[in-house]
Length: 256
Image (cartoon, rainbow, N blue to C red; front, side, top):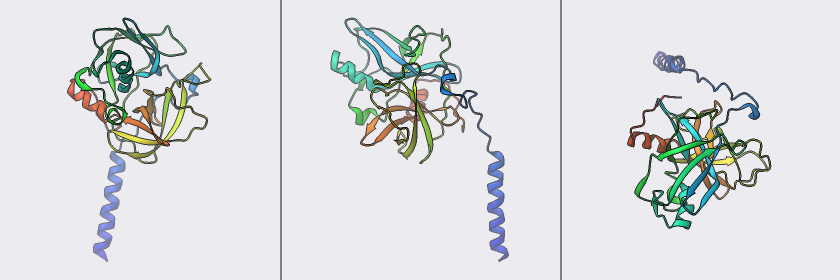
């Protein structure tokens, strides 16, 4: 009996010690405000080639690393370039002119892309089933950010049943004044991506690819990649961390 009591006390002590060492998460200051008062961070893409301009193509956003601000969008938009220009790899080719990011409700508030960080002339574009495990494209950007807000990143994985939120523009969205806030619940996390169920009603999924996915504290946890059946597919930050390591981008891999 004494031995069993000792094990119980040891377990209780370990639990209390873990709780004591666990640091409370500092929420973003805007997360408790109405959506209309959130900072600008949901963007879209305008991409110009010599003979073609893609306007409002998917969603985009900015992220804050340890020392820099980078642009992000979904890599599977390269499938559009493949169909038009015959590009077969993650490379913009010789016809490329410019790439800009901006909020749909504030088109003059623009950020210009200097270059793609993870350009890979040897990486085949592929199709959605292969792109969903690597669906992040990263940009170096000009530093005149005006009031566009870079999201902070959470590096711990999203848990089963955890509630997260996609914030972005839909192709058939009725309200053009602000991006939609879509409530999601994690169904299963597979590491490079996780499946979600959409809890918000009346949401048209078309055109929401590339939207940032944030947690309840306002930190980035994923990117909207697509859908399979009734479930949404969200690219996790695992691949983002791989790109940071590969391209020597300094970041704070905290337990947040």
